Image (cartoon, rainbow, N blue to C red):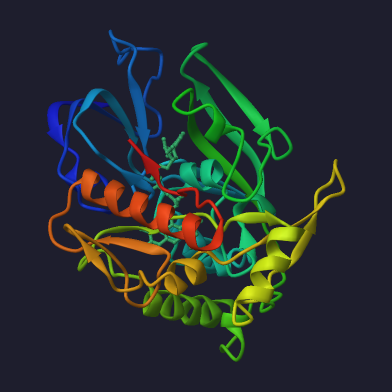
Length: 329
Ligand SMILES: Cc1cc2nc3c(=O)[nH]c(=O)nc-3n(C[C@H](O)[C@H](O)[C@H](O)COP(=O)(O)OP(=O)(O)OC[C@H]3O[C@@H](n4cnc5c(N)ncnc54)[C@H](O)[C@@H]3O)c2cc1C
């Protein structure tokens, strides 16, 4: 365990926003968790790789970071340390003849956050593979394990997301397959080479970076907004008004049996005229309207102001509310 005081978080968030934390505690596999780093003012923030966070001010508390790598295989099960990079884990699984997570290639961030965010891409989500999640309960100060069902996964959502900074996710176990069955249902994957899982992984990685800012060039948090889910009447109204709007799949809600539609937030933002625009020192990525980026040394307030302007405009033009996927601190 290492402790740092008054440390810049610039290297700990992919937006590259330069704020400070009063204290940082870095834990590695095998470290004792029994409260040595207990924060006297009780303010704790768990950071993975900071790839879904926007800092708007200095953090007057302790940030907890998991460092290092540890991964074990037991049959079809892979148990990985929460601080390991998710993309390194995907490569590790392929190197060890375990398949399934190819479509999650090149998603920035850690194994721990994959269970918080239920990360997803190209028709696959972490929840499809997560068997169990081992946590340290920072409130009750004990270890416990969540099954997949306990995690209450939904679109970019989980039980953990609704209890922020209570559970430190130490290890996630994924259940994979010995058989490679390419998951090519998603339109953007049509025609990609897929003789081997490695080939598909590399092709997906290439496709992804064509539409996203490279972190070493421009900071971002990936998709800034969630795709909004609307009722049938709203969907029909918009389709009539905007025949060029992409068709959305309908989803029947399990309890109420009402039908909802998930719209493309990127299309709404693009259609509202925001793609490529820069406001202050933050901008909307020219190749992907869903991504807000650090145009030139931006602050969290620049990002927040741009996001708010987009939300207001989309609401006014389409009557649809956009919720951020990124976590604003
Ligand atoms: C260029 C780019 C592309 C992206 N593309 C995608 C994509 O295709 N699909 C997708 O789903 N996401 C995408 N994202 C978002 C991001 O990769 C995910 O949200 C990822 O899970 C964040 O991981 P992280 O480790 O950086 O988490 P952070 O941003 O550090 O944290 C996210 C949340 O998880 C919590 N958390 C993190 N680690 C732990 C832990 N060990 N225990 C408990 N809580 C924890 C934090 O407190 C916070 O609430 C993208 C981001 C970028 C920058």
